[in-house]
Amino acid sequence: MSRAGGIQLLPSLNWRGLGPSDPFPLLIERLVAFIAAVNAAPANADWQLTILRQPSSSLAGVRRGLVLRLGGPEQNWIWYWTQSTTAEDYWSVVNHGGHSSLYNDGSNNDGYGSLSDPFSGEWSRWDLRGPSSDPALQCDAMQAQSGPSLLLFAQDTTPGAEWFLFSGDAAAAPMQTHLNPNPWTFLLARDALSGQWSVCLRQLQGMAPNSLGRMGKISLARPAVQLSAPSALQQRLVSRVALQPEARIQVLSFGQLVYQDVPDAFLLSLPAPLWIGPVNSDPALYPERAMHVNGRIELAGGQSLLQLGRGFSVDWWLSVPAGSLPTTAPGWTSFADFSWRERSSALMLYSMPVSSVALADQSDPRSSAYTPLAALWQNTLMREAAIELLELQGEEVEPGGGDGSGGGTGSPRPSSGLLWPRRVG
Image (cartoon, rainbow, N blue to C red):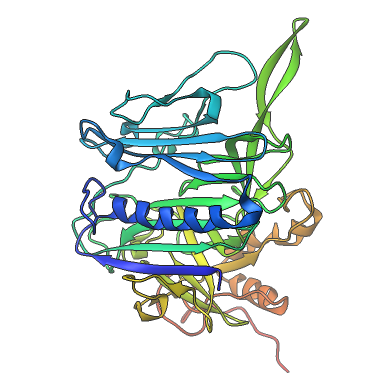
């Protein structure tokens, strides 16, 4: 079987630690095993992955990091991520990407080397920390947790469609804290169409292949606001979320050709087993968030949706076959032996349609039928009608909590007051 996975339960989450049971060494351990399996496949002779730097590369112990080289038959690319060992905010993180020609394989930056930053030319260094207009999304920092914590890894080594996922967050509910520390998730994935590798963190920041056959900074995720939560307790989980990278092209400016980074027409779809959903992380608006940790939803057709940690900003879920779970790595707990929490918060699940070039967005005719649903879903009287419409076309809607309460099971209709009449017969 090509898929493997497992869970580690830890008394705390110490990303700075270098012990064998600390999260960062465990990330490296699983990533090394994945890379060895991928690189050994004959079809990947020209698509080799290489770890250039890891925590053991630190010279003074002031930074923890990971530097990856993503190989291809014509171009090699670098993903560069380090974080201070004395701080855990987003300013302490360096998250860069670029062509391998920009990498300085030296001892600077505590032994991790660096990416140069030319001001012009074909190649440039990208800052992968997200939009600068929103400081809270400028990076994913690894933040320690003092309570029971969970590490999860999953991977698929099928040649041409490989992916590796590693996530760390709280293990138990209720959460003792709402806003911090933040969960941390890392995804390394292969695009089956172009063969290029991509790297993505939990806030959907990273680098991905573009239509030029090269890599670009991820500048947009679709759906972004479409299908987002109409209220704090109802959200829609979407499969095959699209990432839009940038492309560095030549444009004519004042009579001269200059290079410019523009959004690319090519949209990369995240691996199908990953489901993404926006969630309101404000505890005042989402008081049940403390209980929504490591949830599970059973889907029709023998699939289970497993929540990676808590609902936070961008909610990550993993779809696994209920009757054929991924092979468990030695020393790790199987998905079947972990106590997932049944969710009942009226989640709406939407399997995004896929086309040859792009995924459906709000202007796509295939999505037009879903556009009014957000408004319909906010109306307490019409909410049940929206659920019935979704179920009639085969969508799975999690039971319970449909009146906005976010708790309980059974019918999502309000228990008192004016009820929307149902059809008879």
